[in-house]
Amino acid sequence: MQNFLQGVTKAKESCDAETAASMADGSSEASSAAPPPVREAPLYDPGMMKASLGDAATVKTICGSFVKRTADTLKKLEQMWETKDWKELRRHAHSLKGASSYIGSEMLRGDALALQEACEALMGDDTTATEAEKIADVEQKLNVVRELLPRVNAAIVADQGLKGAT
Image (cartoon, rainbow, N blue to C red; front, side, top):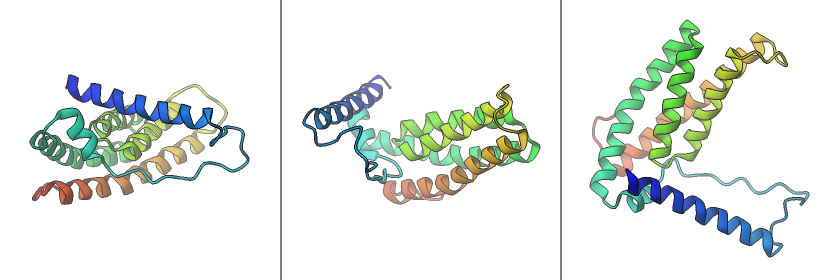
């Protein structure tokens, strides 16, 4: 686990250094009129995992556990949505966010975070949006996770050669 966390930290530092360098040489200015191009992140990053963990067998084990557990997580998210249990929906989104980080799925991590934050907003005291608007926001964020999670799992199953995991 320590090696994994060190690998994630090194990857982040590398990205931060690249961003700082591009800003310093003027090739990318924060004040430019055109927004930066949208980059499609990989569904998950086995290379980052292997660099952090050091061995393909461990990566495959973690990926297999992720696929098995997230199938259950998706069912729980659906149940919490149906029963309007925002606290538990938030908790499961939070867990999915963490699990997504372990496999290097920045897209899923970000979408799980957005769902978590939408649940927190719904449960909070903020009055800038109506309850109906907050519920619609939670539903929209949940729909994104509903669509992305099976794609991530399918990519893992195909890439790692897992059988019957989905």
